[in-house]
Image 1 (spheres, rainbow, N blue to C red):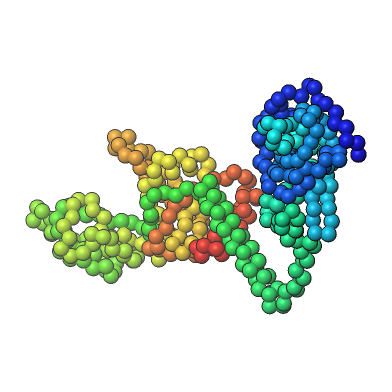
Image 2 (cartoon, rainbow, N blue to C red):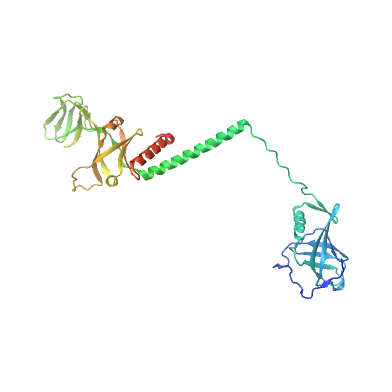
Length: 372
């Protein structure tokens, strides 16, 4: 290699080469190395990606010159040389042999091995013994751990866990879907109702106190007697050969007013009936075409028909509408007299041929997962 060093007249004092913003953008590392410029051998002080600080004898006209420099790293058993083109800058006065070597192209082909050496130094893989470097990092790739095949019990355990997770996920999806379905399809009347039988209701004809009751009276027998406030004693005889259903005010000593319902006369072949007061929202749903259903306490759902009175008392201000429920004869066997139930309304978004199987499926899912 020639010892000639070409001057760099256009390089000014303190200029930064390589397009970097800050002069000390990259830190200096104290890695043992030797710099060779022509026939001159310089001792390396510190080193970075963009420049190196060296010390040694150089010609007098070397300042602000450009030359090819070899960075020599001495390892045990071999030496690594990286060649870079650097701008030489004298540091201090002429009595101090220190120089700064700025790399003209820090991203040249020397960058990859130089960066590997510096990263190994930072990671502690390089050890320094005087001017020698020693590598203590990995020399071969880690071997993969041999794959151990699971045993039969492990495979069964994994399968059971997966099935459990799958079943739990399906259950949660079914429950959430059923809740959303009920929210959009069904609405309920706020008041519970009690199923009774059709018949004739006997009411008190005067105010007073009940002095006698007989809930097993036959045809022509006295059912009850009332001691009227006027001093008269009124007795009511059985009008038919039918069953008696005592009402809440039918007991001896009860103080009653005129018109108080006392007993209900029911024939043996009487059909169940329900008289109730609907809210305006419920009546509106029926007018808009929603289907009325009776949900029994045991979960049975029975379709019903709702009838309103032909005339309303416009003088009575109320938020309720009187109504009467009737049942289809095919569903009477599913109804128990005296059982409580809820009236619900079902929206029909689709035709009955499509919505009926869907509602049946949701009802089955509800019984399966919710137990109702």
